[in-house]
Amino acid sequence: MVPINDDICLRYPIGIRVKIGVNSGTVRYIGEICGYKGTWLGIEWDDPSRGKHNGVVNGKHYFYTAHPTAGSFIRPDKLGPFESLETAARERYLVDSEKSLDQQLIREAQELLQASLFQVVGLEKLARKQSKFEHLTEISVAGSPVNSAGYLMEFTALTTLNLSHTLIWNWQIIAETCRQVSTLKNLNLSCNRFVAPSDSQTVELSSAFDNLQLLNLRNCEFRDWHEIIQTARLWPQIMSVGLQENPISEISISISTKDVFKNLRELDLHRTKITDFDHICKLGYLETLVSLNLTENGIKEVKLPDCEPNTKLDMFISLEQLSLLYNPIRNETDTFNELDKLPQLKRLNKTPHLKSNFGKMLVKAVGLISGLEMVNRAEISADERRGAEYDIWKKYALDWLQASKFPETLKEFYKKHRSYALLIRKYDSPIDFVPRANTKISKLIKIRILNEKTGEMWEKKFPRMISVQTLLGLLIKHFHLDCLTMTPELYYSDSRNPDLVVPLDNLSKTLDFYSLQENDIVQVTY
Image (cartoon, rainbow, N blue to C red; front, side):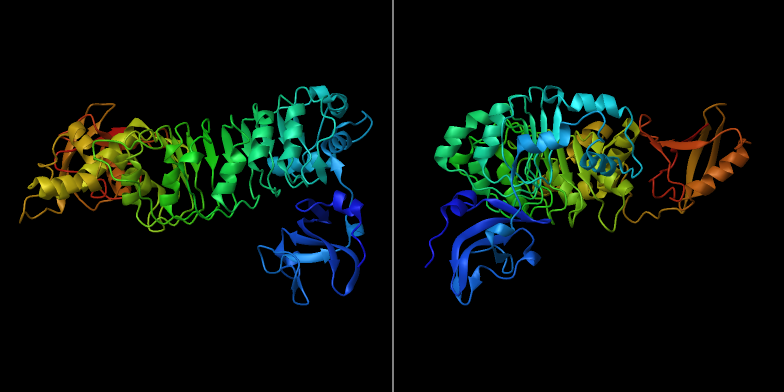
């Protein structure tokens, strides 16, 4: 047996990251292979299609891989050279004024701006600034074969560093970088793979990360929440963490883990494998969490612990923003009723149900979640809020009337419609709105039309199923409005709640859709 070269063992320890062409992988084995001469490296490739097996050759298991075809063996001399962050930064940023700007930076800017013809002006001035490390506030060496820090003491103004798609593989390297660059606040480590730190390492290294605030760990193959918690002990002051696109499927919390993430304000978990909202609820102890991203996780149901309809939960006590975009949530009404339990929710992002649309979803969200201020980044106007609340007030009026006959059924009603008691306090009892039994509803409805500019009032019966478009045409003709010089708009106010003004802004909808009642006033403005 030929002894293993010590230099190879030192250069390629187990867990180190390597790269051939565009393919990156992790060294899982160093040594001989039965039937083959020399020293080999067993690699687990990030892209399973690059490999051939799972570490088994001729029936012998040399190492293990997460995917059955992610492993292969290569000779050490097939690997390219490593470089330090210092070297990579010098190659990319330390330029002469006569040289062109780094092409990778131009490509990144073109991709960010979606402008393939993007050009740089003032190149000489920029080059002079780039040639002085102490002036740089942002650096990206994404895609470089960086696996060490180097000498970084000259980066005295650096706040943002992109180390994504590099060969960084352990937290000692990152700690050394942060120790030398005390101004660093924002660190992108996406698409790397790390050896989990030991207990002694977290104690030894944590002080290096005291100033770090934002950390992106997208697609770093974190699978176990305990590994995330163990690693997070390194960053005591962290405020924002991105864990998107990691194959996490469960969240487990114990008493010993609740001292982690004490200052966390933003957590990104989109495109993980957490489909059960019960696991999300386990994060409710995070007292400082303001924003939670659960986009595209496959969540079908949102269920929070029970609480009385007139109270809020003592969990997620600071959560103001929640993203549920592109989740196949089955029941919007139940979801919004559950989210009303959150004490501070103000901003919600959600894709409408396949059988719904944004307008219908907006009415449900605003009417069922008290305190909501924005939906899909659109601020909710006072008119939209009144209209949505009033629609919910009318929609469940009959259910409320039937439930109010007995205390038990009324309690169950308020459990399923948490915001309704608040709407009754705001718009009074809906008892007069509910049609009496055996009362035939006329197909015509008498409404009053007010020309706000002239004060003229027109009272007439219209079909309940007349469209807003047709009604608008009749009013233009009746009031002799010149559509070439003005744009008429319609609003209606409830005869029993004059302060409630709702825009009739969907021309294809009918008066019945907007729930107009006898003697309601339609206002014409222009």
